[in-house]
Amino acid sequence: MLRRFYNAIIALAERPHAAWWLFGIAFAEASFFPVPPDALMIPMALAQPKKSLRFALVATVGSVLGGALGYYIGYALFDELAQPLINFYHYHAAFAAFQAKFAQYGVWIVLIKGLTPIPYKIVTIAAGAADFSFPAFMAASVVTRGARFFLEAALLRRFGEPARLFIEERLGLVTGLVAAGIVGGFLILRFA
Image (tube, rainbow, N blue to C red):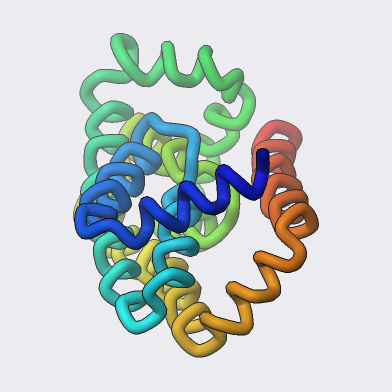
């Protein structure tokens, strides 16, 4: 089953409209969707390593624009939209901690959290709810999301074929490590 899913993602990654899917997932993940864009960008870069930097740009633009929506949700629609999202994902304590930290650390939170497996939507919504400077938020988002996606793309471009062979030979191990990273990010967010 895992092999079929991997093959389906690789097939999707090779399609002409895959970049639009990547943009949509990156946009949605930064404001409300739980799946990170890396889940599609990495297979896309493995399928077409020469286009990996283009895919990083697509993911960055989608994530930054989605971050603006997340900021708006936190700023203007907190009670109507953000609070139900926080309730749904059980992020009450994490959200309160982020609000307090924004007042103290501001742009550093966006820069650091944007690189980690912690869901970026929490950062974007919290920034809006904390009334953090929107221009500073957008600038930090461009830097941190760009750094994350372009670093991944550069590594995949450089080590694309060996990485693809490694992943295909050890699909269960790689999937387990990625899942552990995502779960670890949620646990850090929940208990930090």
